[in-house]
Length: 146
Image (cartoon, rainbow, N blue to C red):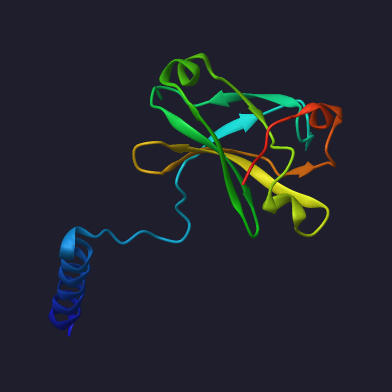
C-alpha cells in the first residue's frame, strides 16, 4: 500500500514538472505578482495644459519608455521618455487640452503608466489620479491630444 502511494506521488510530481516545461511555459500561482516600479507625484489631480512632474523608482532601468495615460476606456500615449531621463528618475508630462478621451464620463480617473518603448512592457505606474477641467494654459494654444 505504501509503495502504491509513493509511486502515485512520484508520478504526479513527474507530471507537474513535465507540464510546467511544455512549450517553454511556466505555471505560476495566482499569488505571484510581477513587480512594477512606481511613479509618484505630489499631486493627485492632473490639469490639462499644465505640466506635472513624476519621480520614478526603477532601480537599474535605463531604457527609453512611453508615458501613457490609461483610463478605463482609453489609452493615451503622451511622449517618449529618453534613457537619460529614466536614469535621472524624473518624468514630466502635460495632459493634452483637447482629445476624444476628455469627452468621456466625469470625473475622469486613471493612471500614468511608463511602458518600455521596445516591447510595450509596463515598467511603472502611478496611483489613481483625477483629470480636472482644462486649465488656463489651454486657453492660449496648449497641447492637443488624440
